[in-house]
Image 1 (tube, rainbow over the protein chains, first blue to last red):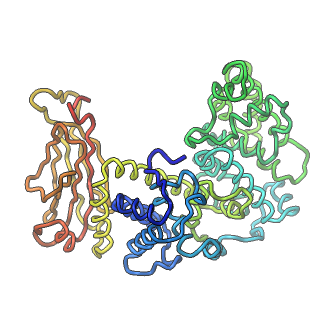
Image 2: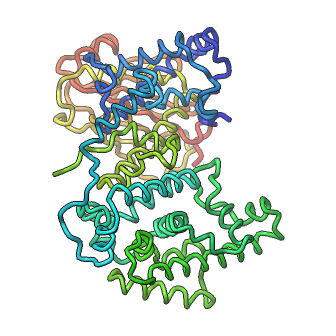
Image 3: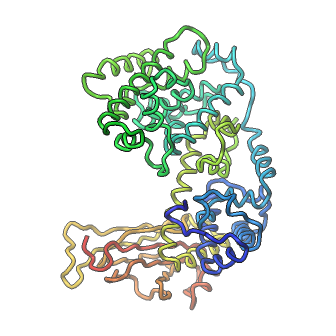
Length: 325
Length: 203
């Protein structure tokens, strides 16, 4: 299915593409030019991919037009949403076209080499759990585990939620990764609370990484999976409405789905709190749990009123014990 | 030691969802101090591209204006930020008594030379005043064509849906056409007026 903001491209033969270009040439050039301009403005390098003339953007646009109108492009190998003028806004797609998939990856890795380190920094963390974690695990393993979970969160939710997780986790990701600069400029100003969406993102990340949903009964697990982790076509909403969950799972109405979701959410939060309070093992997910459970997650999921008073109190206590309330 | 920035093309791939969860790129992201800001920049690029596409798909003639200006900007060597700020003042005016101006305030638009385009929503009857510095000229564009703006103001008429202006700062006087003017320009930028309720001006 093509994106509603863009014009579909239906004929992917060379003649079909040339004809499409003839009809929309100014739009095509403008979308490419606009996207490459944004790419450069945000620090991208076209020279890395072989565009080295004085006006690299125009050179890149001309390459893309040439490639689109005369090159071998298989529409079936292009993502459905990109089989439209949206393709001309996809800078990475055209960079791959320029240098090939393998060289594209190699260039990225070369640029990232100075970023990546397999060893912990020499700064010893004050936190005992962190210090134990460093002794028992390698940085590459910890970052790999966290990275896979974040990739899973992106695949199962939406980019807005991943952005919220990256922001919400700054204060504890830095110390965990041995880079005390991460989030250091925000730690003081945002120490007491997190936004609802950030707290929600932290909880969902924890649920995925620590596999907390495995402790739910089958019905509750299905509701959580459908409500939280079934990526929607519209990536802007980060939770499927209860009415739609009820319809999809053929449940007896949205109120029932809502009750199931709230009950399951409480169980997941409590499972996370239990993990945070577990024995002194140097477990990554214990550290994540200690830092990922906030009272505002109750607001995000409508866990309000007397029924959830004890839960909120327990979360406040957890934050106090972690020195953030 | 500060770390190199995360490449924007890598972040675009991640935001687009085209990188598998087990790809090592994700590990780089979680351990990078700039990851959160880089993610915001990538999602903003996506949103900006979508918004731009919506605009030029609705008004395909705008693409030529944007292309012309962006290509000209890349050839300019002057530092645009050193130029004085130009203001466009949008003042609501009654049109034959049909449009109430009660509660509406004049809108001032600062021309940002560092950006290639700005988009502003106006209403029928609004008067856009160009307070351009010496040596600056204003060119208007519509679906039917464009020309140098001889007056210092543009009143938004009923039926106008969108009007684009190219503001050009040059050391010499205005040339006979925009291409020639851009060739001698020190800076240029576009201001696009989108008219809300273009038929009757009702708010």
